[in-house]
Length: 302
Image 1 (spheres, rainbow, N blue to C red):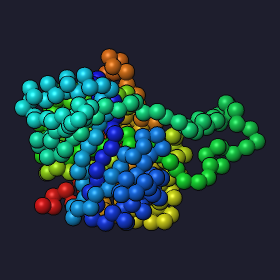
Image 2: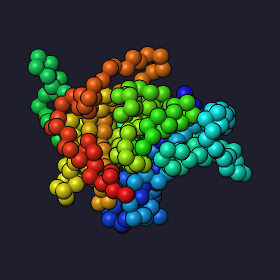
Image 3: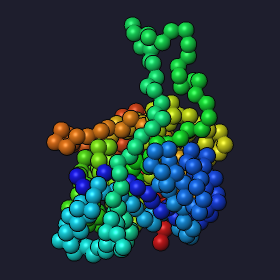
């Protein structure tokens, strides 16, 4: 698999200052000029001013220039034009034809993870190793710091074309899908990196940031909801596809943002997708998804 993670994204918002305050409270580090950093992924979010919210650029990481050459050849076979940026050939730029989304591929190292919280000691019936003290999650203080921007869901008016560019062109692997409705594709070992969803036009459904465990999902969302109960969208729960814990919130522009943890990891050749039907893939447990999560209210806006 030639690509291995998201490097960064540009997200459009009408009010950069208001959105920036949200993402700082979400746990990203404000690095100025609209850039925000995760704990391990570095500068991964760039806020750009625009009248309509949405995804304006997607960056993906490749291990080497040779991988970019192979991707360029695959894209040429699909009649997708690419450019190598100079003076270095370590960046490849294309525009996904169905959505018009600029995608930048660059040579970048794998994610270097640090400062991961130790796994909590859990008491169960008949097996209670934690004695005389509360759970570690109760004692945690301070803001949650997301490790990395781990995945996003992209809406497209031409599902087959966008999926073909991601798989046949970029080399992403399909982990699970509802054919013609949504496909979860991965770069690296996490269950999904870019999910493609059928939509009335080019749309961003959500962007997800990975945190260390369930307590960090809950702590992060609770802190934001204490400040603004109106930013709640859906959660807490566990997805069926990917198995990840989730809590979705809404930034001031209306973009959905997810805290996620405990997502499935996949080794090549050692995974067999299930046959999913309807919305059963959405959640194993948790509150039912609201109608706006299934189809955001502004998706049909011109």
